[in-house]
Every structure is written in structure tokens, then in C-alpha cells.
Image (tube, rainbow, N blue to C red; front, side, top):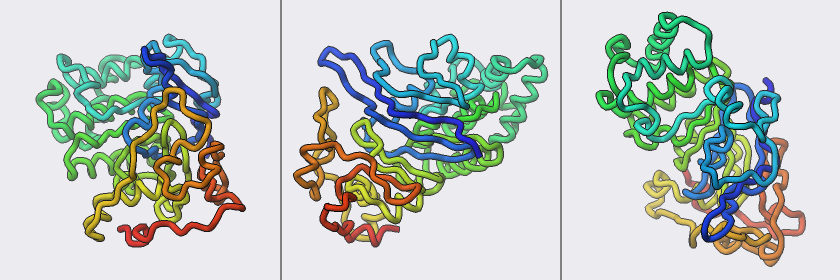
Length: 336
């Protein structure tokens, strides 16, 4: 398998009346063909901003400060919106949380999928319509000929999200960015959509960048997991490493805050404090104020990503050779 997406030392800021907000800070990761990489973290940690920046879907007050984005071997960091329009849908596509903000409420869903096909492929309207119907069938939509002519408000939330996914996959992209695509759905429909994304993308070798705050969803679908905090990836590894051998105290906190764990232990754990402001953040570890295991060096220097295994890295001074040995919280040993 080859690398289809690579982000290196990437930093992104927003110019606001209060000052410069450093939303993404020196972040990097890679994504392999057919791989599902999940990005998790609290609201406001930079997950969605990072994903939207890959497709250059950001407001005018956003500015890339450093780094590089390589898509299918091509550096797209400084691409204009015109050049990006040729790539969106063809090389990289995105599925958002709420399908009603993606679909045009006045146009039948079948026509919207057909337009996505015609935008990037040189086929007749008749052939595009047949492809759109086939995509609806692939998405598990019954009576596709009937649904084809329906406007979005006539469909259920799950049906609408299936249509959005069909439109995103219409031109066979190499990378699919899914920004919390199941959050607005009930549990039963959520599971079906996750299974659909997993089966379709694995079968077609599509790499997926999956954003979620729900760790149970991530455990179901991800090959690798990146934990993001205050605009930086603070831990990354295989799903098994993150869930069963986490090394960053923030990851411990996220795992401990799972409702399923609270049901078993009778106590819902939480991370004390609130995320820091990203207006002129200091150069030390921004999780130090919320970290009960913080050492003096956490208030002096930013920890680099330190290696645990060949696939597992965490930005915590607890991994330093001179750091004291700290056992993870006991409740992590009882998580489902």
C-alpha cells in the first residue's frame, strides 16, 4: 500500500478581532491506501479545522503558517481554489456531520449525485444517471428509482447521509474525509452507516480520515487513532495501542470519560479544567494545567512526540528516560 495523504509540520491560524488564534500547530500524519485513521479529541481541539483545510474549505481569515500537504504525491499546500475544485470529489472528498447542510434542499438527491459524477467524469447524462442509481443501491437504499427523484426533506436522516456518502464516492476519490458523519443519527442507523463506510472503503481501497469525539465509534472502525489536543496531535498509534496501551495523560482522560465505563464502574470520570486559549499560547505543554501527573518540565518545554513502538508515539515527558514511572489510572484496566 502507498501513502495517499501526508501532512508535515502543518500550522494554521485565524485572524480575529481578539488576535491570532493558532488553531492547528505543527501537526503531521500520513494516511495509507485503504487505511482508516480516526482523529479524536474534545470539541475545539482543531479536528474539523484540520480536515477542512485539507480541501481548502476555510474562511478568508484563515492562513497557513507552515508545513506541507501532499495528496497522491502532489504538493497541494499552495493550490488556488480553482485548482482545488478539480481535486475535490476526484482525489479527495468530504462527508459532513449534518447531511441537510450538504444537500441542496430544492434539488432531488438523484440529480445531485448525477451532477457530482458529471463534474469529474466524461460520461453521458444517461450513463451518469445509471451510475447514480447503482451508487444508491450500493449505499443500501431500497427502491432507488423512487428515491432518485425525491428531495432531501422527504428522506430520513440515515437516508440523507447515505445519499451524501454516495455523492462523495461518485468519482472514486482516493481519500474520504468524514467529519463526525454519524453524530446526528440514532444508534441503530449509526451502526449501519459505519459498517457501510467500512465495507465500501476497504473494498475499494479508499483511505479514510474519520473525525469523531465518540471513542466507541472509533474502536469499531479505525485502523489507527490520532489524539488531538489544543491544535496538536499528542498521541498516535494503532487502535489497539491507543485503546489498550495509551501513554498520554490526555488519552487516559478521554478513555476514562466513556459512558460505557461509567456504567460498569458506577462513576463517570472527567478531565478537570478546560482547554486553553489558542491566542498566543505558551511554548510549554498546554495540557500541563489539567494534568495531575505534570512535572516541572511540563511548564518549561513543549514535549516532542516520543516513540513507544514503531507505530506508537506520544507527546509527553512521562516517556522520557529520566521521568518517574507512572502507572495509568486503575479504571482503565476495567474499561469495556
